[in-house]
Image (cartoon, rainbow over all chains, first blue to last red; front, side, top):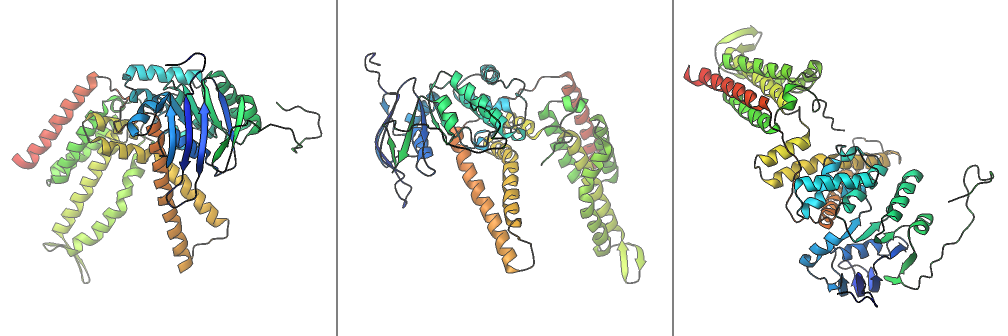
Length: 245
Length: 250
């Protein structure tokens, strides 16, 4: 039931707290809302709870307090999250965690098969998704023999094959060279999806997101005060006149 | 890295249904393991050799692989003839070689070669993932198959982690010696590998749940029907029945 005048958020978190047993609070009275079409960047120091936030949204961790509503419905139990996981895709930090099947095609087809697609349908979806990411011919490649960049793109394919409405991307550019990062930037922008993206890479965030939130003291700073600015940097052949993208 | 040097090929054996190959090699190895007659064992060795030739494998590579058991066999040849009681066949000072011991060592050698060569020809000619899927289709418990496939997938990741940790130790001037410091450091290394493997398993499981995994695996593998399967099955079954007849009814 969406009100066209005042769209309801896809994701709404209110007063969410989280800490590991005996540990300090990682999330502390956190509020967060995500609306359809938003492209949000999340930039914050290590250990400030960004990944924890994603894991709570996917139902991998349980908040100690607070309310999480996804697609307008409160989610508490594992059963609630089974539907959530069909509609929200998450890209893990380490592609080796995501790719567990022997071959690329099987890994990409894993999600669709879990959604109840037949073997043929799953294979078709997998091939289509791989083609969309420029990964034609990767079907029978062995996952552990892929390069770091290829692993990242194939992981992305495994998530996209489930045709999610929302993407949660956890540091997608870590460990990628410039070329693969460019490919990834273009792909993500072309998705036309709602997503939240964790990254420390400012140019990448600037190219892929509309607004950037920061996190501090276990909360999200919602005032969008994070601004990108230029500063002096150094690299080889720096004195030759050049431009950065 | 775990190479699969025989897994890819164009031979008749490579084209066979993996399930047929698994079933045949299992029954064959059981038969050879319990057989006693030398006639049967020699014929079994020839069948195995025939299978290796049929799979068109590089014989030198097969030899290297089979030679892994040679060290073990040499040990048996050294010990068994000397320790078994029975008719002596040779003597050198206080050492006496006995016929039953020699016969037993010979049997074990023939059995090892026959089984190993058959496994190389029939099982090593498929990728581990193919074997996992074939076992799944043969109705083995899916937990066992996941264990096999996951081991196969993550053994490399764990090996890389081991290499990284090992390198981190070495660049800080660690040199293994026979002292407590070395033992303790290696214990830490192994302990850390276990911890990391467990953490990795947790994350992999999380990633799988995020993609809708609810405990049931679906496999993509399909095995095309081929006329050769039936031919192979008939040939091997009759060969094995023949061997059983020679062993127990003759």
